[in-house]
Image (cartoon, rainbow, N blue to C red):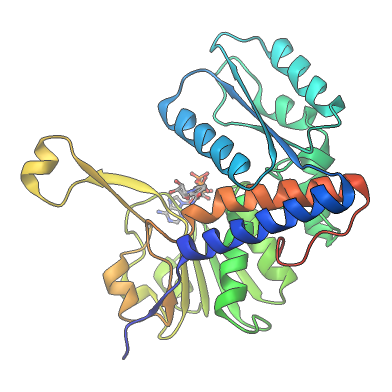
Length: 304
Ligand code: NDP
C-alpha cells in the first residue's frame, strides 16, 4: 500500500492567514471595520506566555487590532471579571480570549461565562456550545474548527462516513464530534472507559485522536485508507539517549505516526498538522465575530 498523503496543516494555516489578511484589508477599506482581538493572560505560565505572544503577533500580521492584557498571578476574580466586562463594552474589540489555565483561585467557568457570547472567539461559552449542538451559527472552538477545515480540504464529501473521535473534552472532543455530525458523518465518541478501543478505532473512515497520550494509537488500530487527524501535542524525551539524558525533548502526537502513515490514506503530522491551525482559526473566528457584530457578510474562504 502507498504511504499516506501528508495533510499539511502548516501550509493550510499559512494560506488561511493570507486569505484573512486580504479579507481584513477589504473590511477596512469597504466597511471601515477593523476586527479587534483582546487576549488576557493571568500569571506567568511559560507555555501560556508563548501562546499569547504568538497570538498577538499573528493578529497584527493579518492587519487586525490586537490588545494583550498581562495581569499578575494574584489578580482577583473580581478584577479579572471587571476587565472582561470592559472588553465586552469596548466597540473596537470583537474577540476576547482569556488564556487557560487560570490560577487556581479563579473560577474558570465563571470567567468564561462572563465573556459576551458574540465575542467568545474560543467558542467555550455555553451559548456557543448550545448553538453548535442545535445547528445554529456559533463561534466554534478553534482546534476542532481547524481539524474540520483540514478534513473538508482533504475529503471531497464526508457524508455517511464513520468518524471516531477519541477524547471527549469540552475544548476538542465534544465540539469535534458535533462538527462531524453536522457534516453528516456517523459519529462515535471514545474515551478512557471505551471497551476495545482498537476495534472501535478500526471502524473509522475518519479517526480523530485528541487524547494527550504519546503515540497511543497504533498502526493496527487504523482502517486501510482512513483519514487520521492527530490533535495530540506531547513532549517526550529526545530520541538520542545522550540528548535525552541532557534533558532534550521532542514533540509527538497521540498517533504512532510511521506505523499509521503506512496504513492510512491521509494523516496529519505532529508537529506541522493540527497545531498551526489553532491560532489561524482564532483569527478566522475574530473576523467572523467582527462581521456579525457589524452586520456584514463573512468573507468567503475565512470560515468553514
Ligand atoms: P483532555 O485531557 O481534556 O481530554 C483527554 C481525553 O482523552 C478525555 O476525554 C479522556 O477520557 C481521553 N483519554 C485519556 N486517556 C485515554 C485512553 N487511555 N483511552 C481512551 N481515551 C483516553 O485533553 P484535551 O482534549 O484538552 O487535549 C487532547 C490532546 O490534544 C492533548 O495532547 C493536547 O495537548 C492536545 N491539544 C492540541 C491542541 C492544538 O492546538 N493542536 C489544542 C488543544 C489540545 P475521559 O474523559 O474518560 O477521561
